[in-house]
Length: 453
Image (tube, rainbow, N blue to C red):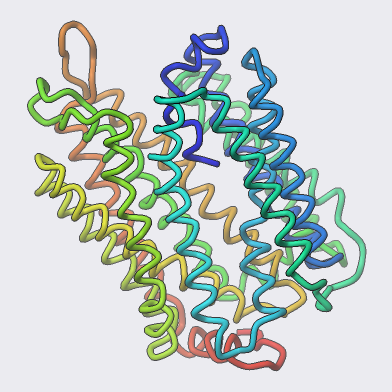
């Protein structure tokens, strides 16, 4: 869903009769809705069963896709994209349900494969969306998404048994509202700060309000007997450090998608652009997703042998190496392909290890909620990455025919930031206590109640 509209961004103002600034809400709405709804979906899955909530997510995806497919102005398009973002709670639920249904010996490899599928979906979705947008109607992208969502809903309903593992209890409505308001107030100015001005009241006021709301929300969650997010569980060393690593991994992962496609598409007259069109760019990026899928079994075996802590740290280091290789090879499409494959393999390792660390460190009745919080942490990382890399590329520019374009130095700084973020993620991963990380791996592979590491 995140890459679906990438080929359309430049044309949306003309297609929907709006401004370029308003058109960016098509992406912002998806990111915000996903961040707000994902923890709610996870908690609902723990309380009432994962299958009905997964079906609800697919229904949101169908509705959102249909609204976008029939939109004739920017407002319904934004609404539809918000529905699509709200459906992203399906992802951590899909990972969590494996713990309920799969035998312990298959769980680690299945988690890694499922996590890697997120990468291949995005990587293959980009050229597919570009091809449809270039050779067909842009509305076909959303009709296709609606059909795929219906297929997923059928498969979930037909083949996924109702989970017998539920937490029971009452849903924390106040906690959900507080978290939603706090996240919107924090993430919205981060997302739009470049347009509003980072020092403007329009940016700073909601940011401060959001921080205050989240602090009050945290105090409330610690007092309520049935919280939306169990902060005491979240504060366990393995869970806390894995979530912190997830923020930085999310930053590093998303920086690649912001820098490399632009390098591929900028005109060769710049001296560093590679002159590829949208479809060609997507095809150069697609192998990265395939590599993620191929390395996922390797990551699962490494986690089994050395623990997911080691896999997470190694994956982050590989991502950092990929960024450094991109700096050295950025003058060649094949060089960038090698760098993208390196980065994607590292992300594949990291994305497979993080759910294993989380799921092995929380009670089985809180699996979906904990995974959803971990997904939220990655979303925060991607949002911050978008803002930071956007500022770098918009301020470090060169002129080509009177048009300001990101400079070669700007791209190098962006790649260095990605490398530094990935290295930081590796450092955070190594802070995870080895014994607790090993206990998490053992609990994943054991049918008994997970240890409270």
